[in-house]
Length: 141
Image (cartoon, rainbow, N blue to C red; front, side):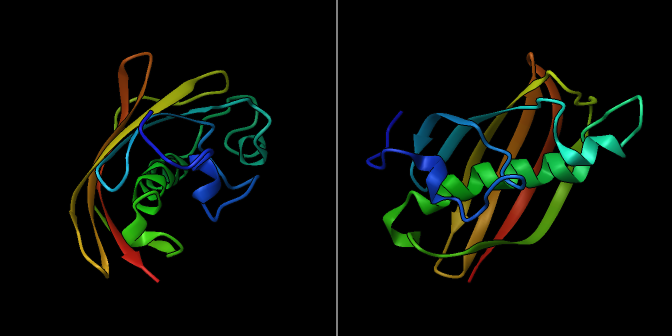
């Protein structure tokens, strides 16, 4: 992992129960990230989505991918201390259900960055099966 920061996850402004990144495997600040999240089954939203058939909501998967991207962004000294927010999403496709016990791998690459935000493209997989792919717009506050 390439990063001067000891704990890149600590760069996120998110905290449990709304933090969906557990580990960072690869990091090129401002360029690319590979990160993971293990779905434990204890997540509160699973109780209602769906009782007896827990499935991670697609919007939570999208949020988790964006959080991984936020780590890549915030690890770049040019964006340290900024607040990355969703500015938009394009080309979103969900392809596989995510359930308790799954470990989701996020692979995200920045496409274009400026002082106001930027675009990134990423995908999520479980056991090499794609669960999600999307293009994300980050706005910086």
